[in-house]
Image 1 (cartoon, helix red, strand yellow):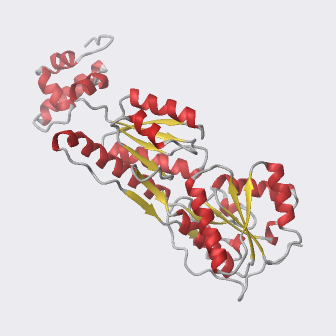
Image 2 (image 1 turned 180 degrees about the horizontal axis):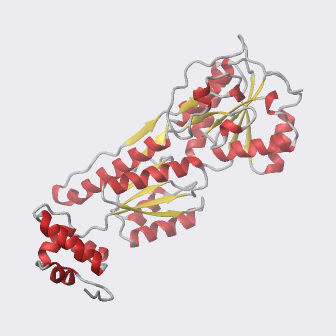
Image 3 (image 1 turned 135 degrees about the horizontal axis):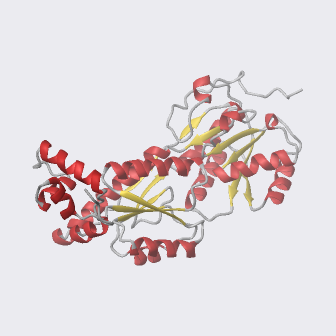
Length: 371
């Protein structure tokens, strides 16, 4: 059989000696085609190199079977775990994913949202940039369903997020349980609600313990080095640091190295797990987000929203906005003063595990200085 440049469903039907409607039913996954006929059709498709026309099918059924995904970037382990899960969940439901990034730039985010609208995606999972204008998002997307991921965006848009307040409070209380009295919180200068919620959790945990909250806003490497040098002098067993984000943890590790400060001389917990947390000396205790479960919930909510959107016009009903908030997991390693079991030290980033019962070195965990 000689294939044309672009074989059609009629070419396949002739080659398989069946009608075009039979080929169409088989390609759509219809069960009315007998195994014997289906085999002939598959042989013809393979020989001709036939590919169904997705654009024509979209026009015919009025759907693109595509979800839009707009992230700041994909440079950290949390985002990469989430992206992989979103793609898998979408594919299992018959959808493909169109990924764009906005690089924390609100103007670029508007352009990317407009691109997703032009591509006629059936729904959008949005991780909004700092200071996103909710009205602009809704105006750009029109009636396209949207679920915000990791960062909520007001009461009128579905969201799936970490319980950021509880995460920071739990991490702070864990440091307090080790006897640290001077706990410094380091935050990013991005004006993002999750970071503000984490800061509130830290402040209220310190207040409840009768301790003074101390906060550094990390703006650049030099400023962070100098402020850490000031706050951690003189070194002592009462000093600890709580990092409120993935990027801030990286900045802290770099700054401490820059001022030649030994990690064994300060307690440290980071919110968001690093892919190399187990290989730092001492291994880094983190409050990990359940990346896969958050991503799975986001896809499920968006698919519910798209299904409801398709029938909403006819039924005239309005689905209630859903806000999902999941807890994180404290992964105990040595940087906070714990001596956890080996299984916890090797916990993969982004996965849920138990954070119960730190094994400490006595009533108050202290580090032995390296010789």
